[in-house]
Image (tube, rainbow, N blue to C red):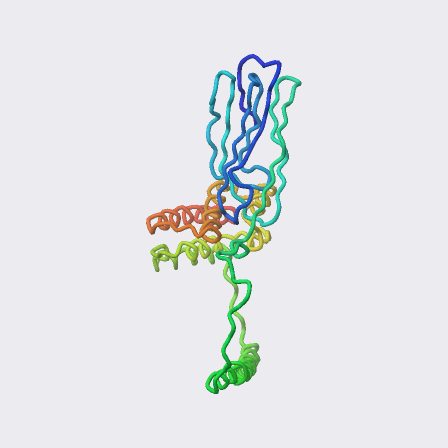
Length: 294
């Protein structure tokens, strides 16, 4: 998609460049990308919709004229990434008739928060004093007696479970409820228990979006639980599934990603609002499936 920039094309000095305020960020962390087109009136600047390469777009500013002499326009995007590793993004382009301007590429490194050291550790650990008799006894307790007790406990528990499973094999199993009944039950239970009334956004969004991912897996055989948000969106679009709800679904999954990786915290009012939105969305899926089976 391109946005038109109207005027007479300059003969000399046209430049197209882009830059980021950082090229090293954690999963879910925000980066600002600025695209600048200089002295190139008449050129159409490339626009991005959902993502720039593997990076997902969080917000996009309008095309802004920052100078008229020389003529300069800028486009700003806020982006993030949820897959670790080194990312190389292809150059951005601008076109006018048969002429093309091309920028340099952009490079990013995305890391897990656990991989980023919070503080510098000492080069040499402090020297330890000789252990006392009590410390030796505690070491024996913690490193020998407790592990042995744990092993015997696990063996005993495994034998009890095996015995109980053997007895249970003779009993007829109950029929499994449909995916729609299960999904309706999950939301009804959490509505009744006011699951949204909590301060832990990570736990809240993880559990709610995991329910939706499990339903997608049961009804489409897409391995939704194992996919990051961008992969799941691509898989659903490729199969034309949940087309009218894809934008809302992507927003809700990104909220879960932000709460998990960027430690984002939402208010209880926002939890309730998003619960209502999720419930309305899945109830539409359930009704559509029931109407189709009649």
